Image (cartoon, rainbow, N blue to C red; front, side, top):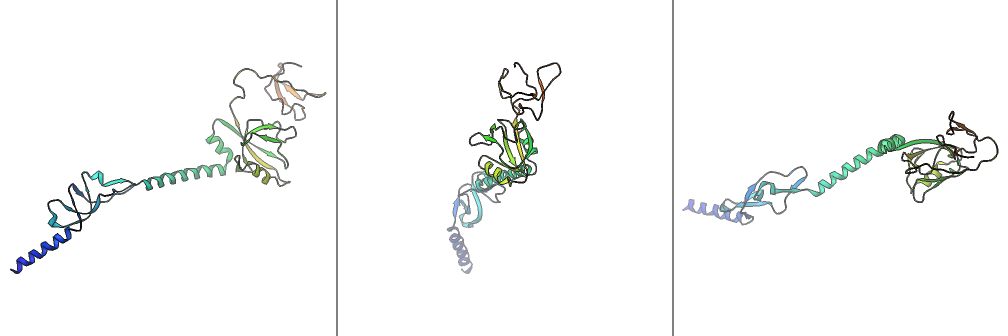
Length: 242
């Protein structure tokens, strides 16, 4: 009689424990989800086997038709990894640009040619296209006349990259009235005209033109610094009429 009562007590305890978890009608799987995955919602819990409820609950297992259904993508971890990669790559590019603006432009903008120029204190004499860092025109009194041309883009002032929002402040901050400034421009290698020769007229005052021509041709070889055509005529252009 004592043994029978003892067995009945064990059965009662098992049934009481089983009542605290659900019955799994599929397969039970154990293990962990790792990497960029996480436990699938509604799959992981304390389960008991269908038809063997008397055995009680099995803790922290997955109830699913297939083991692959136990884990799902961890969207938060994947997004975090993507953001981290973007930050690392962006940081590398920024460090490259900070170390060498010219080298950076040549590496990341291979279709453009980049050059640096030193200018004295005072106005640059440049007019920029509205809302951009692209030169629209060079004034007659500009220290950059004959060096910088319309269509070129200012990319840095004293080694600091600029954009349309920061360019004017950067130019002003670099002008302390005594020191020269280092400017870097990117010049597009694409021709200004799609096809055909470009003709233009220019007036000059009396006196020497200050032009050197290629031997036996009307093509300009060089423009002297004292020439009234400095900045208006370039080497390689051809004189067609006087």
